[in-house]
Image (tube, rainbow, N blue to C red):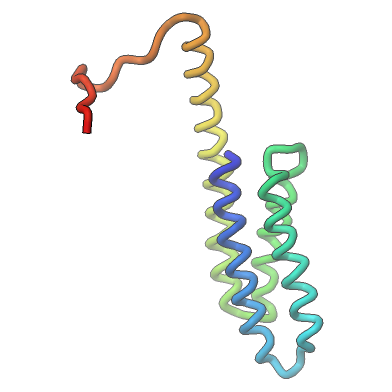
Length: 128
């Protein structure tokens, strides 16, 4: 799960940075405000990469997704981008957990001496 979620968060890091560049063009917003908000959100993305498997990490990720969608008030394209990243976040969490469960089952089989599962088709792997 960690790899999939971290990949999504790093993608969001860049999207938030680019959204900050777009938001700077709004004459009603101060540059310092834009970069403070974007900087906090970008820092949260990086910190969440390390916290995603800890208690509350996934929930913080969902809070970030909601904030990303809400940023569409300032940069309308972020409604779409936020929704896309929310879908990616859901997929990362959902399929990441399934992958983690499969790895745990495989490790348990290997420890119990059941051996490695047979390859599909029964063919020996080719060497290069």
